[in-house]
Structures are given as C-alpha cells and as structure tokens.
Length: 126
Image 1 (spheres, rainbow, N blue to C red):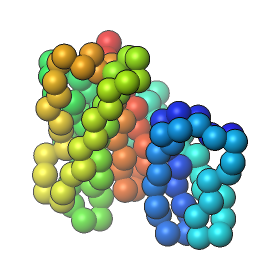
Image 2: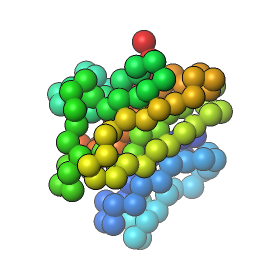
Image 3: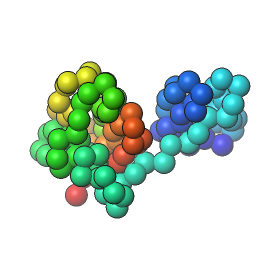
Image 4: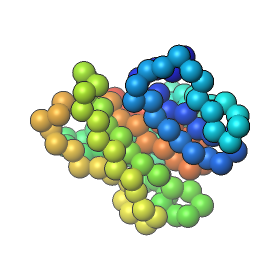
C-alpha cells in the first residue's frame, strides 16, 4: 500500500514518482517493484550539503554550498505546507544555485530535495 506524497524510484531506469492518491496496488516500473525512498535528515553524515534549510522565504540546500555539476547535483526541491494542501516543486539545472524562493502565505513547514548521488533529504522549519 502506498501513502500520500511518498517518493518511489525505479532501480532499473531511475524514474522517480510521487504518490498523489493512495492506493492498494504496488508501483511497478520496468517490470519490477519500485523502491520507496526514505528521506535522510540532519542526523545522517553528509547532511551539511543536503538538508534543506528554511531562511525566511527561501529554502537553501545545505548549510554549505552543494555542488551543481553533471556528476553531482540537486535535481529538485519541493516544499509542503503543514496541512499538505500546498506543494511547490522546483526542478534545477546544472550550475544553478540550489535554492527556492517561496510564498510565505502557503505556510510551508517541510522541504525535500533529491541529490542524484545521495538520494532524498528532508528538512523542516524550526
């Protein structure tokens, strides 16, 4: 069974999907079950470059700059409101600063980012 807003990844082709509607079925890609992505938090090593940080109306990836080169980069940043009714995603390009400006009216409390090498990371407003 899937849960609302979970991320899944295909280990064969790399597709990443997010659940918008909970269902009882199994997510399958390339003929195999997809892997549920667990998000890392500040308790894990390498967190200084990965955990999303809230700074006023900006989400910054990491407390130190994260590389944004072809071999190692942030693919997207996503913010979610406390009630999970407002979600905004920003897809990033190579050499782009890994940050996102948000609308403070949406009461965003949690952010996710996906690193092509180190996976899914989560940071919440303090």
